[in-house]
Length: 493
Image 1 (cartoon, rainbow, N blue to C red):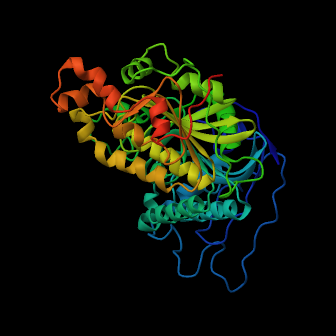
Image 2 (image 1 turned 60 degrees about the horizontal axis):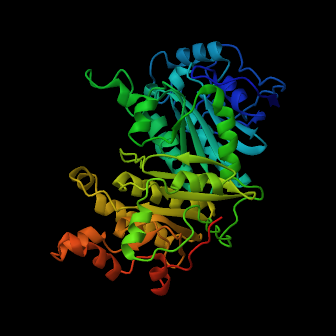
């Protein structure tokens, strides 16, 4: 059993990276199958604090140890000249007999299966034996009902094994999908570099994706990109800006960040299943009195000093972590999504921040709701937007499809979703984050089929009639209660 504690960085070895983020860990047993280690070179080093077991012996009539019947002989499945020698050198240099170390670990008191890549072993590439280890690790996680944490540093699939190596991506993708279907979270930490199939499977498929600053991330490695490619697009910071990862975490904060994420996604006792207690609606933080007219409701909701999402999240949660991005090339700073702790339990949240919600925001919210639904975690949404963004860029980014997807996520969620209208409720852009039948409102909010100004314009009324139009729309909190649109008006603190 190894005791952790060192600070992580992008160029640590596989075992150093493991030690940097775990309290303790022990390596998982070697799975059967795959190619045998190269014959020359010193034996793999045992983890500190452990004793190596006796060497495994194949039955007399078995093929080469670790080599399944019908598999390749010397130099792998392609007979790639020098492949055995390259593996022997990698083994001598690293003390590892493959590019990934799989371990059963404890991180901040939470047990997890951790996969740590050794980049010095043939560039952390994925071969058939790597696939064996990854498949066995995912299976172990399902059997034990544990999350998977991947500490990735890889250049992609191993060329010396050809299509046999590339096909491992299908194995890994299937295992990841099985764990997802089992309601088990997956967290990826992208070290430097994370490219090729490792990024497209263990990395991009994870529920929460963290990256170390400056890490090279992308499907294309540095030697195969177009020569004029923008290097920022292949960096951790560029991937965050384009909505592909959730956060860039400094090395000295990674251990604590992983501990918080695991506490949030893996509450004691496991998933609550489908008998999930709904999140209580927050108390109102703004003006206590109800508006006298529809236009007064609009003005109060548009007041710049009114409490917005950040104030509500800060008051509601003891601590929280956020996800970011829609995984389709966009991120919307006008929406906050993540998981928080309140009174000892985890609640997911998606909160509009008072701006026009962009397609990336709706897709991020839908991703959050579906993840919470898989993990059996209740959801809180805070509704506050003048409406969906309607500029040309939003249309090109698929505004309609993004809103439709958000509607679908909320209306089909099996976990309870609680929604609170905290400001502007502008048409379908607001309704997309409002749970059917579980919407509350604050006194300084309104909800309307359309903004009063736009309604007046469509009806060809002059500006003097906007106030009357606001009244006709019945948009005040008390109107919404009378219309049975909301459950109640929440009291102030």
